[in-house]
Image (cartoon, rainbow, N blue to C red; front, side):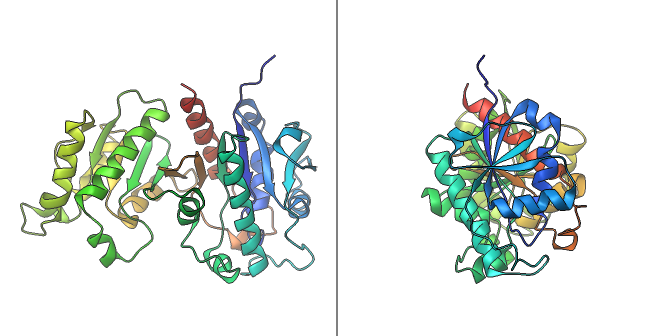
Length: 336
């Protein structure tokens, strides 16, 4: 009998945080095994320690390749990168060793996805300071993934159930974010959003684009970017046949209309906090981060390394389970 469950590569994350513990708890949920075949990418000793901490029934089974994985419910298949000395690991402490281990897992996962050995990559949280201490000078996952895949145009989508937001810019100053609001970039994000929604199984996506300024500029009284950059991008997207609300929507109402009136399948936000705040208010524990524009499928938890609960076995695994579900949804959609 053919097993058509997508194969997901799940990264360990920063081992000084609660990532490994969260992975064991998500993996132990029978519902995850019903929809996916999961293989962990990271350090086997760190994962064995995580099982001991959480008390989750299971063990580590090291494999040299995805082809060797058995996907059993009694042992987690781990592609062991052997890059973390647990005797030197300190929970809730920024360490170069941990930053390197987190990076190594992402890099390996990308290569496996590019080779077609896994259908999607699901990443656990890394710590930006530890990453930089290890010599990898990136602002976060999105920038690493773009670099490793040679991708120039990417965007971040956050989801919380059927609440979805993409971003014209993310990790930059607010001053720089305003400068990045240009017609070409807004249109590129609109296109990426539309394609992702189709991949998620929405045949006819309905989108809205948030304005930048209060009241979307109020006809130029509060800024001209809405009329000069965002509106032309919307017009161009509509000319391509996409179902987009015809004008930039005021930022203080557009998210309400998606969340409560269900008028849209996604909103394009202009900068990091404009999109992140409403998503996290609505579904902090269930948020998922999806990188759009890559040649691979990548989803992630929408939280940090959870240093405050590292080593205690109490960190919540809900976001990782939702990230697994979205990865399955997109991997299945890409087969259509």
